[in-house]
Image 1 (cartoon, rainbow, N blue to C red):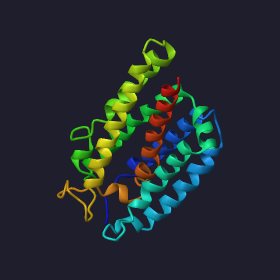
Image 2 (cartoon, helix red, strand yellow; image 1 turned 90 degrees about the vertical axis):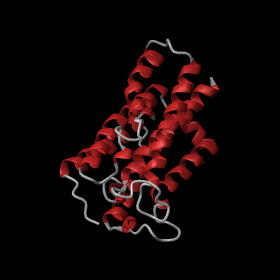
Image 3 (cartoon, one colour; image 1 turned 180 degrees about the vertical axis):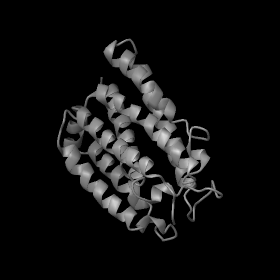
Image 4 (cartoon, rainbow, N blue to C red; image 1 turned 180 degrees about the horizontal axis):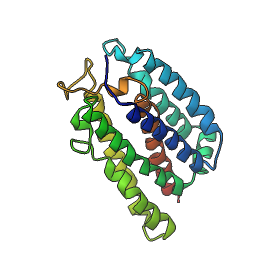
Length: 224
């Protein structure tokens, strides 16, 4: 399937992806293991998408599972293993919080993809996607919660849970808009962009990192 996605959109998203990884790298006190894990994963997913592997959405089981499920299995492993917990506990809450500002340019990219008819309007802030609120409020939470220390632990927990729900909402919308056996939304203009390179990096890398940042922060807050 041919999509007329301008080069500047693809290039911008590639930069956003690597910026997301860099922000996680900073949150991990510049642990190089972040690059050793994420970069090979990006390469594998990029090659699969570039080859057209994900464009066949009628297989059983669906190939789309390989986009994000391995990343979330790895996240579960981190939260359930001793070394994984040790790694999570040394992450910086401040940096994990500021990482969520990446959701602002991501939402701009999604809106740009809608304009070029690569995704449905439902996946943008003009539709059912309110995730940009998480990106817009992240600097406020960072400033008052971690620099000024004027926000209570309860407020920080509530914000993280609310942002998880915002992200979960758009993830569900995006899945149901993919042209597949389980499509339920956006039949006139389906979600085609994430089936191709480099937008495949959104579900396979950027979204899992954002989820991970929230859950890691919640672990910190609940252990205090």
